[in-house]
Image (cartoon, rainbow, N blue to C red; front, top):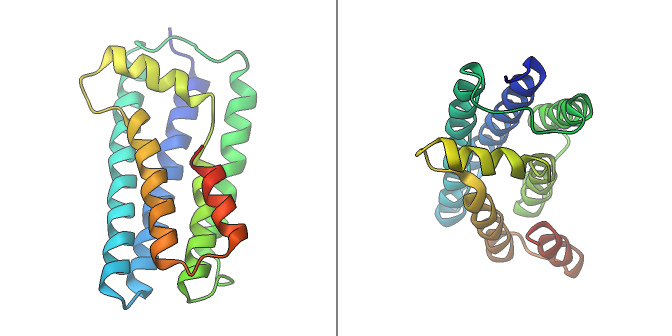
Length: 169
């Protein structure tokens, strides 16, 4: 039987991806370069695809189809809630600049909040339970596209290139 805390974990994951989509949409509206604007719109669209995955997972949890898969659900939930608070701060922040490098730095932080190793177990179970597209491989492609976009549009420094390689490993 699925616990309420597992369902809360799934809802929090969905919420963080919603926030990421909103952030990337917000950035796309601030960009004038057509190629870069398209990049940010695509990143927002990918995040919305992830939201659909989480909604599907929540549905399965409500049907008690997903077992309790975390050793310490409370810690996972607490960590994800903390990431959600930080993601909201990023979305609402007026502190990041209005240049590509600042946008990518902000987005890097967002992507770090979306990375949580324990979620691999959810991806695994959902690949068994559902025919719906599982973002397990999509997340990796998403990160690589993000790093490629940063290299193309972000006026990259050696430090940021290192950060990008760490994010995509």
